[in-house]
Amino acid sequence: MKLTVNLGANSYPIYIENDILSRSASCISEVFNGRRIMIISDDNVYPLYGELLTKQLSKDYTCHHLILPHGEATKDFQTLPSVYTALLEAKISRSDLIIALGGGVIGDLAGFAAASFLRGVKLVQIPTSLLAQVDSSVGGKVAVDLPLGKNLVGAFHQPSLVLIDPLVLNTLKERFITDGMGEVIKYGCIRDAGLFHTLESHGSFEELRDELPSIIERCVDIKRVIVEHDQFDTGERMLLNFGHTLGHTIEQYHHYGRESHGEAVAIGMYQITRLARKQGLTADKTDERILNVLKSYGLPYECGLPIKELMNAITLDKKNLNNKLNVVLLHDIGSSYIHPTTAEFFGQYNEETI
Image (cartoon, rainbow, N blue to C red; front, side):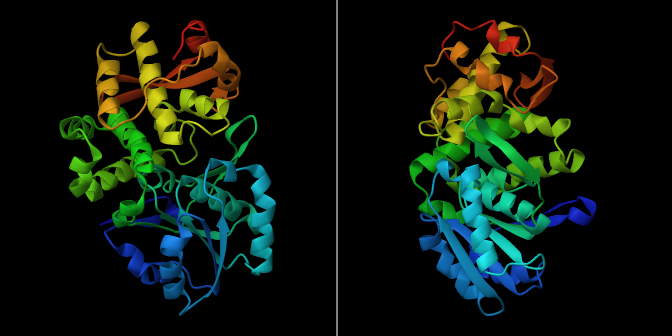
């Protein structure tokens, strides 16, 4: 199946198909006619899929690869000099291509390198985690982390192509499937009550597996439409950050070493909906439905931290503009909205543990 993100000169196709990785070279040749390619991957993913990709591409292109350590700690500003050095040594020019082969960390890091190196190099995203397939590989938001917070140095750099092969998920460890389900649940919460009901009625990832290509397509299509309406994240696109204001602060608090991104977002979705329900900003039992579906898919819903421990990071959130904090809330499952408030939305519960 093929979707197209319609952004004028920055438009690009997204292919979602079992085993498309084995045909990736022909797809890439449709959008790239340069000579050199740098494949950026990690030490978990490259041994599984790097050789397959390189073998195909080497028939028509000069291929180089950079293999980085897996994990969020790699998506650090301090990693960039080594990436730029590898690109220079490979003689990558503005007419060449960077391929991000990996999960969200590699997609974000390689994407930011592509956006900033020589003021912009073409990018292809080949996401290999569920989270990257349903969310981070689409939309052009690329970034690295700083010690003070997640994704604080970033850019908008749309890929030329996204290739999504659901079969690569068969090699994922269970925790990374669970991690990705956090973002799948998010899409049901913000825009698709039918998708949320599907998740409720199945109750486990194994029961969902046969429907995975269509579920990935539904999530990507929701994001595609939102990105087309708001490419640069000034309005509607903020809805995609449901659960993230709290989620990012939880990740940062533990230096990205305890909760994964999807796990932290899961906690954030439930806890912010619980607080919103207390304030009459969300329909009754909405938080309860989220709690039940998180439990079904093995996702956490609390982190054991007092809200006051997280307040400093919340005030540094990118959605905190002119001391006004835009939080994403739900009218009900499938219907989301942006609620302008201040950090006091959380601060009034300072003594609560979430």
